[in-house]
Amino acid sequence: MSKQLKSRFPGGASGNQSGHETKRSAFVILYTKELSLWENHTEKPMAVREDKSPAFLMVRRSDYMMGFPGGGLKPNESSLQGALQELKEELGITFIPQDHLENLSSQKFDNSRGVKCETQCFIAELSPNEFKDVLRNAHKAEHFMAETRGLITVSLEHTVTDKPFPFENFLSSPMPPSVRQDLTEFLMNTELLDLKILDDLINKKLLLAPPGKARPTWPEHKFSP
Image (tube, rainbow, N blue to C red; front, top):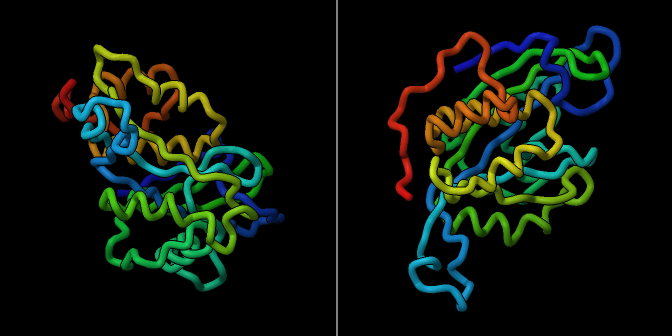
């Protein structure tokens, strides 16, 4: 699946470029479908400690905007090669094989500085233990504090229509439109959100509807209350 965004979606890739040169970047969304958020909280009932929720990782970039692990590509470096290299440099991840990265989307746009950008976003599903290993060890990565100022677990617990929705608060965080677009694509393709919730977030402009694409039509309650 691919898409092209016009200049009405500025922002996204970082780095200084001038003239007509195109800045190429690759990013990865790491996620797990069953993360136990409360398992170590001994004061909680066992039912709560055993509850599982889908979750994914975002990073606080050096400009303090939210984004995904990734960055600029070297000359002649493929998007896939660059994505794996960025995972190693920013989060210390070396255990993900090349064929485990799934192509999600591509974008072409001019960022806020007028730089022409091409971005490729991949997704990779991790086991709960792999996900936790990333959280435990990311601070050891070579570029963790230089290019990535923090790693954030974004959980989708309670994402059903009759309960409060903490994820909506997170979406108020500053992030470039290109990142918000990839996030929408990710949620649509992994089917981690209730359809009514996804539509509501798009209508509130907290997520961006993919240009020229119909809204998803999967069952309304993917996760039971």
